[in-house]
Amino acid sequence: MDKITVTSLANRIPDEDAAYRFMESMRWANGVVCPHCGSIASHYFLTPKAPEGRKTRTGSVTQRRVWKCRDCRKQFSVTTGTVMHGTKASLRIWLFVILEMCANKNGIAAREIERKYGVASRTAWFMTHRLRAAMARNGRQSLMVGTVVADETYIGGDPKNRHANDPRKAVRGRGTEKVPVLSLIDATTGEVRSRVVADVSGKTLRKVIGENVAMTDTTLHTDTYRGYAGAGREMAGHFTVDHSAGQYVSKSSLGTNLAENYFSQLKRSLDGTHHHVSREHLHRYLAEFDYRHSTHEMSDTARVNHLMGRIGNRRLTYR
Image 1 (cartoon, helix red, strand yellow):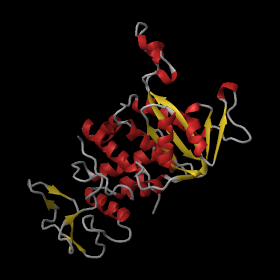
Image 2 (spheres, rainbow, N blue to C red):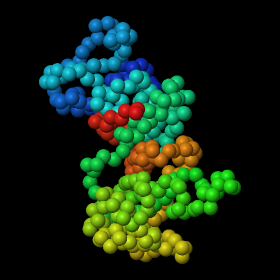
Image 3 (tube, rainbow, N blue to C red):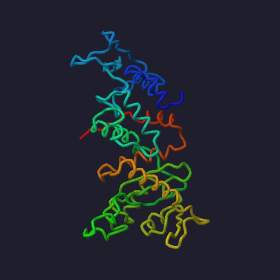
Image 4 (cartoon, rainbow, N blue to C red):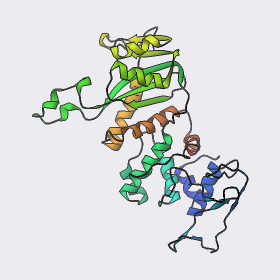
């Protein structure tokens, strides 16, 4: 596929009909597939009766392209069963937002989408979260194996910025009310898996590592925080660096620099682009940044195509 840029996309999809055709060429490159029953060859296009487009139940005209499956007899479009299912927003806007979220290293705020594309603030917010749901890792992916770097960080406001009389101001480090996050990075592929955790106890860290890593076949690299000791004993190898002694890498250990670099980008982006992220939705933002970091060797065009392969069978309601 030709290189996708904002300019080329604008030229290629001047209207909704072109946007549907463009998305069909990306999702159904090998033929139209019924999202209801999975049939590949048994379908036909429902040609609109009116030349200006298809009429909806309310009488308005839409350029939505509708197909019908001969096997299950159900109608569908390229957005059926995807994160865009049932959307009232223009598909053109969806495609531009997909490109923005795939190409912008620091992400894009919902308020910026609201201003740039003229949609309601709730619509922009919901669109971005739906795409983050598509970026999220599904539970069927294989376990990490080989060499993995693990580290934890805390997301939230700095206690020193609180009011002088706030008793919470004196609490720092692992005792703060910040949200703890554990990230695992495959040193070979660059894949990142981040998880919001309740705490950074050894039991919690062991559980998350065990759910994502083939422990007996993997070498773990961490700092000297004792919470990793339990998991480390079950790994093929466990190497550490002592930050308190000014050690960040050694002959035997990669250290945690891969994770520190990721956290640096994550925190700068959350602070500079989104300003505030609630604990309730933090896992969705982590999925977005994990996805972009894990696919950092892809071009923007390849990343858009890759994301198109993940938007199916992932529904997210506003509630």
